[in-house]
Image (tube, rainbow, N blue to C red):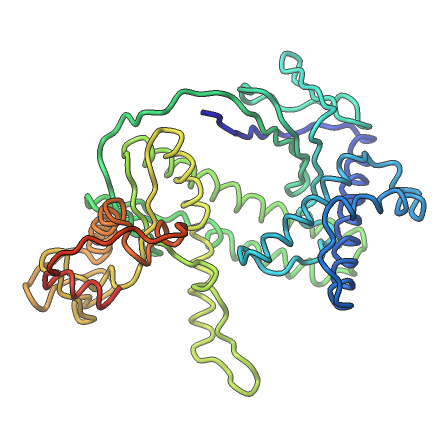
Length: 411
């Protein structure tokens, strides 16, 4: 089977190369925004969506109109148009919101699908119109390089090299299955009773971040001192993101090594972290409390946790199952009784029917694991796996038990 994998390295360009990299990123952003502007105007006029080929045919005209575009590699500009088309397709297929214009200094990047060289022995990369650039050779590159993306993070530039290689069908070394309940007090609670403490990277640096943001707000915008203050704010954000990323990689690697099947909740993080401000006519309630909860949810990185678990388990021959999260913390794993009163506090679960007691997060993990087994057996409706299928699995005629009826009524 083919495995696509990315290897990321920090670049060490000289002064001239840094200026060129910033210019190329700006040209790429300009082309993306111009294509988006044309698509919006075309849609308002009742026209059909303009595909990549038709949009790319306009590039020569844009280069004549804006002569500085000629200095940028044509590949990176073409890839920008492909990114624009992909953004619209994701919107049409309801996988993302409507594409937005890219801002300067936010997500700066450009990509080369070909024309680059990698000299691992001497730790350098040759890029079109940039020449040889040294990089921090922190790991070996496996496979054939297919494309390379140059991106900015804080004040540094990085090269992400996507490779492709043939690997054998992976066989999981572990044979166990586990359910994971994601939370805030506990980042991840396992069905075997173990748990992972949260990192809360943003919370740890929040006060320091506020201090530097206040300093930045008191400077004259775009002045030299304003840019200095901005760099300090960016450095804190970079440190927060790096710490969270390292924490998630360690946690997901440990879980994927020790388990062949992992069941997690199919959480809709975007919906969970929406603001409750409301409108002037209908203002929201408990806005400050909800804002704090939203901040804590986003600080955990649940979506990235799930993404990393999915590909790491697949690499090791395991599987990730996403199950519906409804009533997992209110269902008794012993008798199946569902009641709000079962969860007496944030941490304590005590079934009002049979008297079963345990930590509420462990109970949630046990129910998630049970649902994961049902999904793999019959594709339980409402699960993340069942929603991806175009057809529902054939149902097996059997007499429903009392527990099954309760679960169906509340899922």
